[in-house]
Image (cartoon, rainbow, N blue to C red; front, top):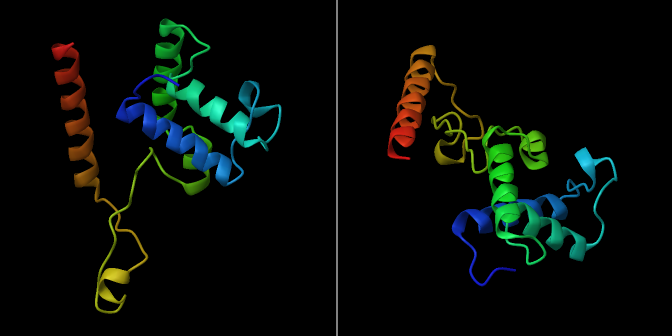
Length: 134
C-alpha cells in the first residue's frame, strides 16, 4: 500500500471491500472467474482498483484509479447495480409527510422534468468549467 492514500483511493477501497462483504466482488476479466472468497484477495483487488498497489508502477496505478472512477461515475460497479444507484454515495431524497411518519419515510421523491433539465444543465456547466481549468 502507498505511504498515504488519497480520499478518492480510500473511497474506492471501501467500495470494493463493501462488495466483498456482500458477496458481490468477482475476480477475473468481467467477473468470469467467480466470486472472491478470500479476504486477502479482496484486499489485493481493492488496492489495485484504488491505484495504491506496491506491485504496479505509478502510471499503472494512475490508470487503474481512473478506470475505477470511470466505473463508479457511470454506475457500473456491482454495488451500484445491486442497490440501484447511479453513482457511489448516491442517495434519493426522502419524502416526509405526516402520513408517512415524517423523517422515517421510506419512499424517495421523484425529480420533475424541469428539475431534471436543470440538473443536466448544471452538470454540463461544471464539466465545461473543469475542462477550462485543466
